[in-house]
Image (cartoon, rainbow, N blue to C red; front, top):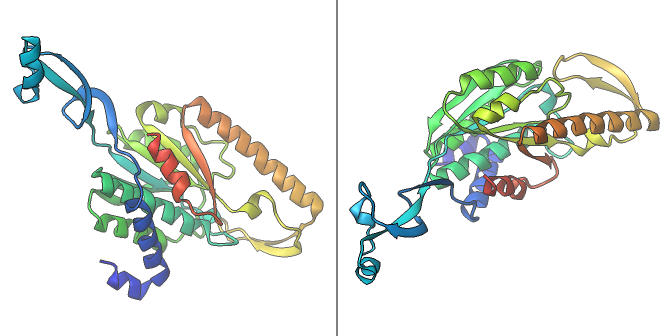
Length: 286
């Protein structure tokens, strides 16, 4: 499957192989609903009622009790998963790897988990608009298509409109879904997911580089903003670094409060980390 990809983009192919190995060598957890119905997880034994499926009658228990009894199971419920990376210019940054690359790896982990559990997934790309990236699928090749499109997506010159993202996700997602929103969430004051979290199960994965939160003292440097593509000279001394750290911390605390208030689970992954365990821990709690 990966031969042509390996020859044209070896780092991307290796990332896919790594993500696939991470998913299929670990138990992520099945998606059992709390509804009683047909499935695999036994819940209880009760007396037969009119309309029950006779295939679920436990004949041994029924003969002992003198009345027909049926087995009741947790219903195995298919999840509709939506993977929504936020791809703006700010993700074109990283001291170990680019945030763009880490976002892609996280998307691959989620998509492979869907394939493993036979859940359909689709992907959207968010920035100053929300657009379809890949259509709904359960197939393995769909993971490759997803990551190839994300990898080739040009983020430079694109800004993030959090208000637009919030509104468009609310209106575009008709079917109840498990929504993974993945981005750096810098300056996300206008992000409002309260209404969206009522309609859908929302999980936020914050992708950061540690330099953004604790910048090194580099002195005077020329910086190009990847969102606006404007360049300027800035001085990163002790005072500037402390100011940046304080600002990011305050904005993060505000973001965390909003997410917690809406009952949204979230995690932060840095560019020098292996994202698998943090992503899987969130998926086990779904």
